[in-house]
Length: 345
Image (cartoon, rainbow, N blue to C red; front, side):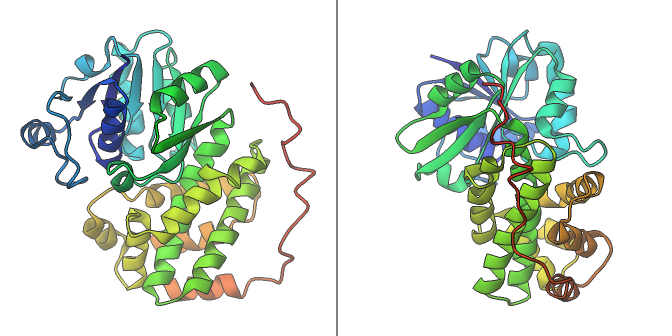
């Protein structure tokens, strides 16, 4: 029986804790919020963020970080991306050499342009860091609805260990060595989902949504290829798959926030109404900064930044996208593709 410490008791951390418990693991869940842990111990349900999903009586809920980390086979880091660095720094004294950490949040640090796994490795260099990502709303995983996802690790041994740990009849897990590609897709799809929500809030239709999804993945893939990622990653589960589900579902906090902005609310008003961390807001500036650093055209990411941070009107942003210079749909990516480059395993 594997011993698991889930660091973060939000909707995604809670859903994965239940999944791993059902897979036969011994699970402890940590939160820095005493009221949240008291609620979980009393109700055995994350009533605020995952209502209706009952948790086992013998699942452990604690505010003691040392207790949640020590002697665990795997740690699931499930705090919102803005808190990844500070939480990893708090974890560092208790993590043992080679202890496996799986990051399941999605984002890029605005000040450093580092991915979340890079942040964790910087704060906890002794850890064996992997990522888990894909089209996977916590609300559906918690209810046992069939879901498919990807684990990215530096070694095949770790990837296969985690694949076996998470996988069951309703949760299919693929493995990959393209950690950077997985994380770029995970973070930047949230920014495109904000754009999709804004379009919905403006009253636009399916044509607009399809355009944003397809041109959004083109932007993300262009950047990823320039950064050395594999193009296949962006046309897989952690790229187009995650983008589709985030742009189309009302489970998506990014889409919901975008709808409110499209309807005329400010970014702050939209985030307050959604009542959860809207990851795309925190990744938008980083995404645009990366596009400038690597000199990659990312007009959707650019316009989302203007709406969020420069008080541009949403309808004007759409007009800017539609009236850009005429382009061919595809450039020849073969010369940039990393498909023939030998990956780590």
